[in-house]
Amino acid sequence: MVVVNSPSNPSGAVLDDASMKLISDMCTDYDLFALSDEIYEKLVYGKVPRSLASIGDMAERTITINGFSKAYAMTGWRLGYAVAPLPIIRQMSKIQQHSVSHPTTFAMYGGVAALSCDQSCVEVMRKEFNRRRDYLVQELLLMGFEVAPADGAFYAYVKVEGDDMEIARRWLEEVHVAVTPGSAFHTPGWERISYATSMENLREAVLRIRRCR
Picture (cartoon, rainbow, N blue to C red):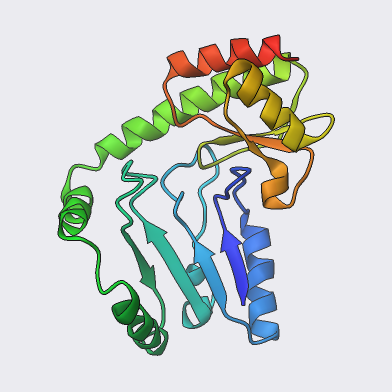
């Protein structure tokens, strides 16, 4: 099985059409299934992500997973969904119904409300995330950091000099800025900074990181 996450965590990268076509061709050539995690699909800035299942006959060999936590700010509600060929869904249901049975009732009502409400609120938040991204990336570049291009999600992936675990510890303990070291994603030498917070908090975080340089 090939696992695809676009837009991605931790970098925010969005795979272009050519890359998605390569993945599609590989799955077809080697008779592979794909798991496509599209949780950040609504939080994009420029590039429009293409669903892997929409390419050729990939719908027959793709499990697409999504949820409500990112686009609708429902982190912690533990509500998601999957789209796949019916035989796969039937087997998934056997495991799901004997492990968690079903989501809690209030979460399901919340999901219905999210999908049936005016979706303009999602666009408002997407634009706000874009504003925060532009601010944070610009400030990090001014400090001399290298920042990975991010066309989706709500993370800035920043290259650091030295031990990323130690730098994350220093930022947390010395200036109280919490980041996730790249080693957690098998990419040592990077830090993931989330901008899923207020502009006021981001400005303060920038000042504190600058003091720690």
